Length: 237
Image 1 (tube, rainbow, N blue to C red):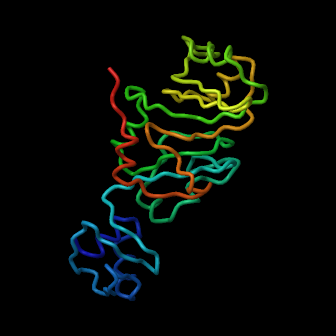
Image 2 (image 1 turned 90 degrees about the vertical axis):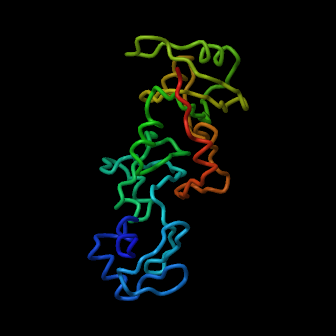
Image 3 (image 1 turned 45 degrees about the horizontal axis):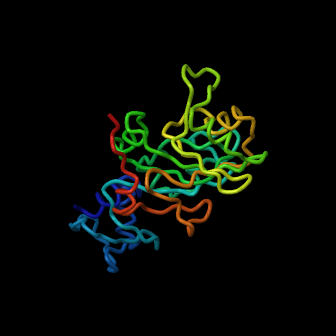
């Protein structure tokens, strides 16, 4: 693929802009300066820099973000900054979208991609991807509450009771709650239904992919092949 097309496909601007950066000596490929826009390169394991920023060619973008509190999962936020302000401009240019949303005050694991089929699979209720939330509660937890959560609680405007896949008490005020759905304010509403209240909420796992301990709030990283395998859903019958 021609170098200017490579940069364009990775979100570094129009082909005209990419061509100009290359000709002005702002691009290196595999450690070597390349100032001819039409040089052909194999894209497998291709590494390059644009204006000093290191990049690797990826046909599709798959990444995780440790969402901080007080950020909105929207390109057009209303009251707080957008999570997309935490990402490089190149990822926004290529159309990366969040897979589902976390409330403004909810933190933790969020997946993003520009692969429409992957986004659909991860979002579709047919696939029932389990998600684990770390819930800090106002009142002490007890077995009666977790039993209700597992058996199903009736939420306003829902036709049938909503049940958790798992509800594990970690400490007096910390619960790990596993859900296969993503209804509006679901965790908060479920805890309210068992006479408790959510004080803090953090998503710590999607499928078999856990939020890494070394990924700080506001940071992002690419998903490698093992991470993609861990998060890939299996369709439910």
